[in-house]
Length: 425
Image (cartoon, rainbow, N blue to C red; front, side, top):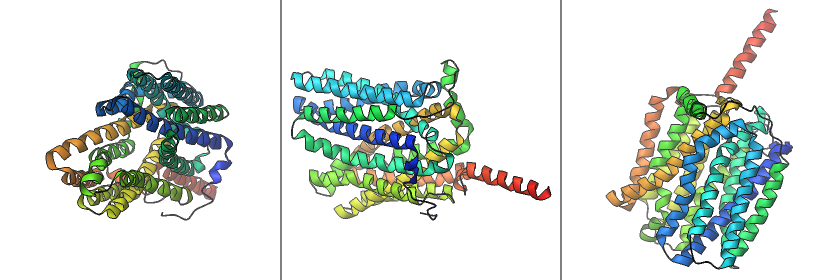
């Protein structure tokens, strides 16, 4: 990392509201990841139909896509803390309904999809509020550390959650849902104890106001460049969707090896975000962001070019670390550049970009694998990511040449002006 640490990376936890929020987020993420494991296993055990596994994702993504932009307006019009607490409560309700479903012994799968539709709706309202609320919890000079620590703990929860869910599933799906529900009860309580003052927008919910976030993004080359770079990089670099086939047909490893491959990007991202909490990026910001995307693309090329399990594991680790750097810089850029009154709507636009890149990236990887073959498709995706990185340096030169975050430049300029005025006086 480029700078010496100014203080302990965990010092941001001294802010009570952030500590409560972070604890709630960790517990909620653990619970959701545990639930996902149990849902997948239980549905497949009931039906044995791979199509049903695909419908699990669709049932969650469809309401998310429809509701995410209105949810951004809600995050600006109402208290974000309350929105997050209510969404965690909705996820708790989903867990309790799933518990009742499994205890009832029904062999019908459609109730699960209805429950997951509710879960996807809650996720749509929770995502922009979660992204936007962080700026309301800590002082501006602690924000970068808060982002890094929040990201690192999120990735750790994503790694641990499926493992815990899998272990508890040995005692049956109801055990998983009971444990997840207990974690969500604690998460709701912690979120209710959090205070997050914000500027509340009282504009009525019209199509014009809902689209304010999109207009803001399109009017700011820095924000648009950062969001679209991530969109197209992940769109072409969605090789993780092909990991089951790579593990079986190229790397010749079993389910245990596949588990390690799936974990490697999360480990790389988690360790990188911990490092960022101690060594935050403050200079050569644009170079770090583009470099992170380039590392992600290069790692994807290596992944598609090797038949070595250990080299593939290292490539995935670097992909996670590179992606974390670009996500870190992009999140700071978007949050610093966005007025608090529309931060929820801009975060909703960002969520659309993220969701589209992830879902369409997996689809693109599957299509190109059918066209070109498995390994060639992965290499093509990595090469396309590197090409996008180079193209975006030309299309958004203000972003690629950025030294410091714009808010830091403005503060430095203001301090310089004040100094000159003081000297003249």
